Length: 198
Image (cartoon, rainbow, N blue to C red; front, side, top):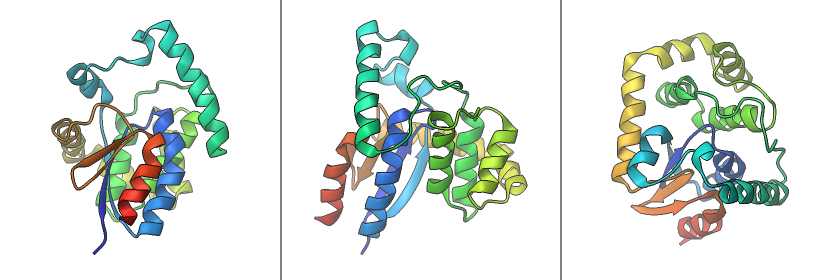
């Protein structure tokens, strides 16, 4: 019986981007089922004590850049430390990922491509045209995906995922949950891999 991983992410997160490819490799090797859950950190942070980047202390902001450099090298991924379109409003992008999931698409592949667009390709994910292009590049039918993303029901699902995350104790992203055990941060992927093998 395959394990199930609930994957909470935000598409502006450099940490979710850095872990995305490795996470995909781990769950594929473990033949684990993945429930992709984009969430709204704007609702999560006030409830859990988190702060948007611009409101964090200068020392924390400076150390974040040190860690991003380290993990960029460790993961072997391109990553701009100061991307042109960060933070971008990500609500539409999140609903596109949800739409892909609920229409038989490839939500993991689409989410990674959207994050790569922010952190490696200097593309604005707040622009519908950019999202439509990314959808096509990842093998989705852009028009139908955008139509589903625009459905109010998809918006309600997005809100529901955020509420679900809070109920599960999520306070940051990426968070991977296996049988109610959370693994917060892409630097916990080795622990997640061991859990799925256990």
